[in-house]
Structure formats: C-alpha cells, structure tokens
Length: 134
Image (cartoon, rainbow, N blue to C red; front, side):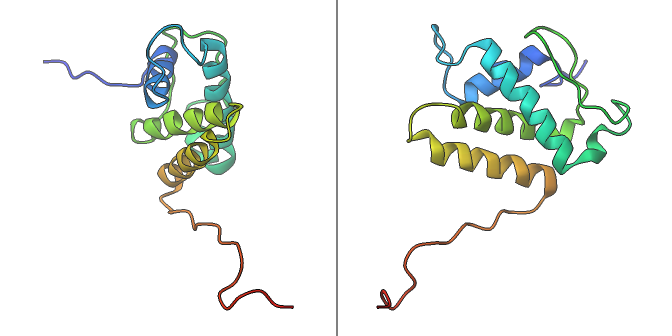
C-alpha cells in the first residue's frame, strides 16, 4: 500500500489555503492568482526566518510559482502546514475588512511558531494599571 502525502503541489497548497480561509464555494472570494501571490510571498518570508529550509533543495534561492497547477513544491514535510497558515495570513491581511486583522495576525503567529518552534509573545498595550497619570 502506497502512502499518500499531502501538500506536494502548488494546487494542493492553494486548495488547503482556500479551506483554511473557509472559501470553498464558488464564486471564490479569493481568486487563484491572489492565493498564489500569498503563497509566493510566504515562501519569501520563510526564507527570511528559516534560510536553512532552502539551502539544499533550491540552491539557496526561493522558488516562485507562476500558475496553480501540479508543479511540485519542494518543502520538508514537517514544515508544509506552516506555509498554508502563512499564505492564509497574507491573503487575510490584504483583505479590506477590519475584522480579518485578528485572524491574519493569529495565522501569522502560527506560521512563525511552526517554523521556529517559538511561541510569540503577545503585544501588550493600553493604559497601565493604576489609572492615567496627570
């Protein structure tokens, strides 16, 4: 019996990104070119954070994909899901609705945590306890 791997092609990634975005009914809210852009930008961001993921398979270069098709995406299996979250984050961040900001940030935090193993520290702000100084 042959095992089936997931997230091996550009099409696999776009399909899973679309699922995470809850955008599976046509007409799609996010078209293929915008999700492909999000995926390519995520690859660039991953190269910035974890350059070692690209050293041996891409001759230290970041791949860029032009079409949503069955082109193989050479990413180590244990990091593949991170790229789905990163691309979904990018797609949401480009959205015009303010409500998407929190989801985009959450997905980006998940992307970074999956790549680095480090849980992000929440950004604190607001008025310090004890009230406002005059």
